[in-house]
Amino acid sequence: MATISYLTTTIFDFGAIKSLPTELKALGIRRPLLVTDAGVQNAGLAAQVLSLLDQSAVTVFADTPPNPTEEAVREGVVAYRDGGCDGVIALGGGSPIDLAKGVALAATHEGPMEQYAAIRDGVSKITAKVAPVIAIPTTAGTGSEVGRGTLLNLTNGSKLALISPHLIPKRAICDPELTLGLPPLLTAATGIDALTHCIETYLSPLINPPAEAIALDGAKRAWHFIQRAVTNGADREARWEMMMAALEGGMTFQKGLGAVHSLSHAAGALRSPTLHHGMLNGVFLPHVLRFNAAHVGDKCAKLCEMFLLDKNADLAETVVRLLKSLGLPGTLSEMGFREEHIAGTVTRAMADHSNPTTPRRPSPEDFETLLRAAM
Image 1 (tube, rainbow, N blue to C red):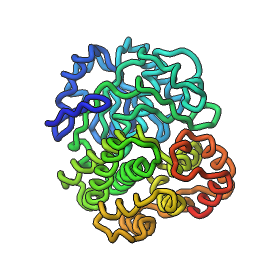
Image 2: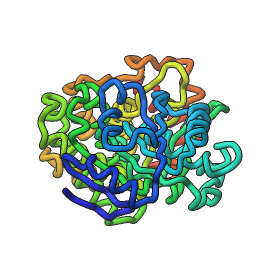
Image 3: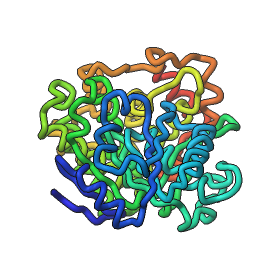
Image 4: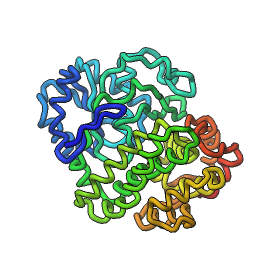
């Protein structure tokens, strides 16, 4: 069992979930709110976690939507207060973990969520009063278990990031055992999310060599093990490696993301259709790689080297082939995105917090071109 102290304390390995009672005690959490979703409940993972705890002291909130909303945060706060809770356990993929962070913030800070958004100068408004969160990922993709942000669809129709060191979970419990039953398509979509995090943070122009090294290592793990994890969900080595790649992707958020995420956040703000973040990242990644190619020096060649490709290989086209082999959509149209969604998506992408760290800053016309290419 590995304990990794980097950004937060992470307990990582098969069987790590058994450490939950010890970590709750260490943080002084006696009455936790368990935030999860219906899929995690139906898979029996919530029951597995509850079996480790005094269930009379736990309040369960399982109404996390696919893309967390401000309305769901408010419902979670009601459950938190009604249960007399003093901390939050986040169990699931990126959506429950992001929602749990939102609840931990809203339960301890007054006012509308929009005032805490990074692009609204909200970083300084988030204080150490945030309720403690223990994050337990059940997918290998988001990295939110060590991330300092949460993405929420707000009541005003925007999808904004709330970012603060105080939103980093106090503990991350990463147990690959919890991912063994993940279906192939979800394994692929969340795995591409992890791969994109590592690639995009590596390509960010910010100077942060430690984060860059972690991003390269995570990208290498994801690239070499994603196919194995999708093909054989019981492959324990592949599941361990993919969860580590996802964790490393989250660790590198400190270096900033870019246009892939600007577009994914913007398209993911649609209430209908509901678009999976990892799948969006996969669709946008090849187009943004081409858009940035002349602005990242030899980094694409370095990625090709890490992926055991020829250094002059077309990385974008190789990603396209990977998506196809994993059974993931290759276009926005396949996901239900339509022409009428383009204008609003461009507006939201321009306002996204990921733009300052993209290697080549897109104009509105560039974003529209990228969207049309991805259609």
